[in-house]
Length: 345
Ligand code: NCD
Ligand code: ZN
Image 1 (cartoon, rainbow, N blue to C red):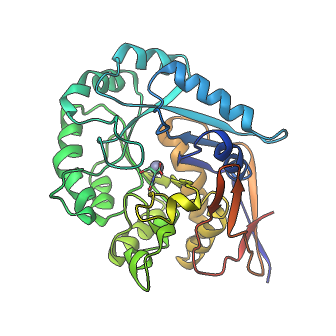
Image 2 (tube, helix red, strand yellow):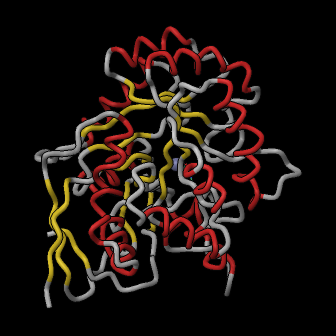
């Protein structure tokens, strides 16, 4: 039996596009399916000023193939030197949608991130005043905290105090990976949402470590135990509007992944929609896919849901190329290790 599903054109509320040759190769993979995406600013050097965000947006639009429609929603990388007035100006002009907080050292290219959270308080106060969202990479970086506990500890030590100090600030907990993350969002009605990646709905930590080390399943925050994956699936498919899609599609070339010190990041842009449809079908929640992928995030960011639609059709399993070529080398696509029956037609 063939079936179809039509949903508003999805948006990706957390995406790494990189720059140069990789940008040109990965951008069409997202723009084929998604209307808008929140673009992560962790380039080298990071996107910290309005001028850098404008130049990066121009490079993205230059890389977009003719005939494709896509709106990059730019972010600024928060540093201890970020000026509240600059942030307000670039938000007011419509150039920048959100600010990204990386604890220094938490993940790829985060060395310029925040060490002393008191030093960014004036920026956060200004953002609360003007209604500008803060996207948070929620992991502590203290050497003594086990990597599998870093998200839960961040909630207690950093996020909760920060929210109490600046209650009007709208915060997105990005790429949550734990039951604690899900529970924290559910127990806080005001001004808090969370993105969930495609791959964290599919893998747990065994996928990374059992039967040999699998660098293409390594990302940050690292996948946790199975009970956490199940909590994420329940949250994503619940219809709760505080949870929405942020793929965190994060391309690294194969030599940078398959290395003695491999980079963190899973590249999922190409097959994300097929995987999500499969997951939502497995959870008997296909009617909630539109909410998660196309509606809740727009609502959180105060933007209209797309007036365009995409249609998925169910049939024989669809295959995707295992890698895409970029001018800088091949990038391996996330392998969900299950047949995917839904394709965008
Ligand atoms: C991201 C990257 O490669 O830029 N990596 C990842 O594992 N998700 C950074 C990030 O979002 O943490
Ligand atoms: Zn990311």
